[in-house]
Length: 396
Image 1 (cartoon, rainbow, N blue to C red):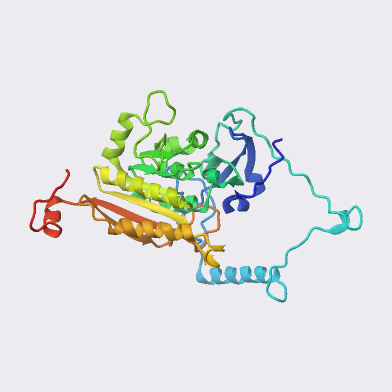
Image 2: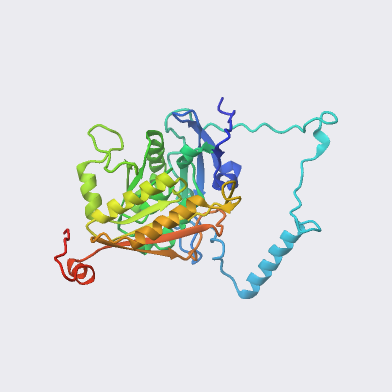
């Protein structure tokens, strides 16, 4: 039944999977929910200056879009050639002229054209067993990710979304901001962004909720040892539920936090990331409560980065195109920036999307990156700004 993939009415499919070449996506197994699990290869491009972006990687690959070298004349000639190619694909009205399959294979008049049956290639039926454990030098710039496709909304974390690779682009283009840091990813999903972050940071807490999803994260960490070991980064997969007010602890429980983990998180974490995780208002509220609680208890000033895709939909309630999930995210950002709790000052700013692209995907204008900075508020400043006539109640 592995080649009989059914689609439900609430099924959603990431554009990243739609654009991946068929040869880069192979079915590996069925997960605990009976969903087909695929393995995709995400090639890391160079940064346009000729240097590879993964530490220690010197494999020559193509430059990122918009970052290619060449004289102005050569670039102008290349752009003119690309325009000619595009114009040749358009009809007289300017619409894309799609080539159709020939009708010679019709069995009879009115019959449906025969199509080649596409059967997935099964790498292994075992749990996380792969025949290509020994990575060659040519694979040092390739990230392998287990994921599902076409999932119901509650399982979208098992797919790879544009916001995740958009965040990975920023990490690889601004490595000095993350180098040697202890970092926390909220809602890691498949863990692809944590893997990229661990090539620069010293330690990454890769967190999400759900046994099946966290097991997938852990397998993806194992799949990418060929990148992580030379870089020296460590990834710890842990469960973190935004709808709870505490860490999942307990001896013997898989993906639970130890007291040492929690102490390390509070003592050393300075960077937090969350990639395309705001699609449900209740979860977004829980995310911001968790973010506030964690950043407010860190012992050092910290910075959080959010990537989000503004998805426009026509709604009957508005009888217009809107993006309610994005609007709610923005309202939470605004509320956090205005928060005055007497302990922490939060500042919010949008990051321009002018950094290079290191992965092959469609970087659309609806992708945004936001930066949140949290700094402890000193008692002396509190006394001057907020309590000029009374004793401030500050916590050290």
